[in-house]
Length: 326
Image (cartoon, rainbow, N blue to C red):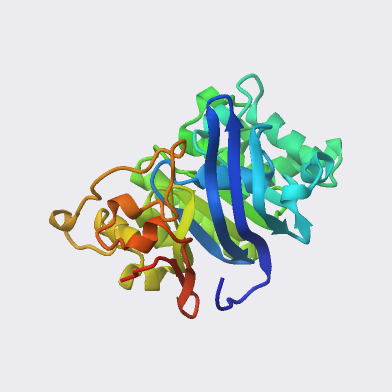
């Protein structure tokens, strides 16, 4: 990646290629994915369904199953190559140094336990706190993520809470150990616009206040545009472009990025301006050209189907993977 940003690098994903080896065949899910995230920075990884966002998030967390094989590259966090780390090492990193928020937060909570108890267990496991003091710390953690009426909700069960409050509970758990990196995988999917804004405002405020790196995976370009300092655009397992958010929205250089922006209200002023992207994403189980967007691209060249994609610095901090950029 070209250029530099303020803040120390928290996470580097370096030319990562990953495939799933299944009975149905080999699925090359990620192809030379690369980006980095710095302390105090929010980076949005944006793409439609099947782009490889959740696979990348799980790879960073070391939560991929036995069918996943890293064929190239590495993921470096705090000097540790996550792709080669043992499970005991990853268990120490998860929760204490790397935290994660998921979509469908209610399903991530134990339905049989009060939420106060669940936050307690995280604190006792990852933070130096005694049983005697833990309740007070739980209430502080709930207050930090703006859970109202914490004394009463301490004894509430997940089914008694809204999806937004369940996500706030997960945030209290995730942030209790003051992690260096927060991974948010579609954390507001299915929320109404008010709840979505409340959660994202809170994530951004905490990220800046704690100098925490935040990696937001989302299909919502407008959401990423509102909250991310930089954006990484993914398509069918490939990073096609990355740049500061303002630059990307104003002057996209990859044809897919331009079409993606044109298919949303990000940067547009009217619903009438919204376009579509003809075609569909490729089946990763089939034969794939070097550029996985080639079949849908009106700027494709012969080399797009025959030669490895060049990853080029168009300008400082603006990289694109394309033979014929805009």
